[in-house]
Length: 87
Image (cartoon, rainbow, N blue to C red):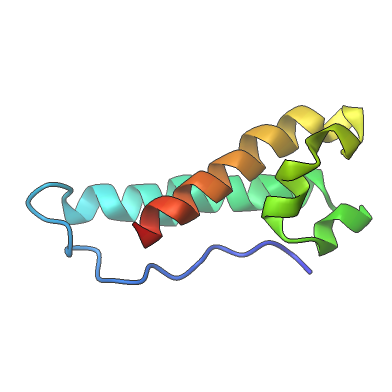
């Protein structure tokens, strides 16, 4: 099971004039997508990739040391952005 970029639950222009469409595309389609892609790459072949991302981040000290920083940064970014889209 690979981690996936969640679908934006509203249109890209829904937050205008506070956040414009271009910024939303950048943050969702590129920035958040990069977190997801990098997290998948870091955990490729590890059984941790089968857990929900919140569980992986919650148990970060159990993540192999050679990928821990990548998982912390990208998993945390994925979780934070997912929470933001829902807010």
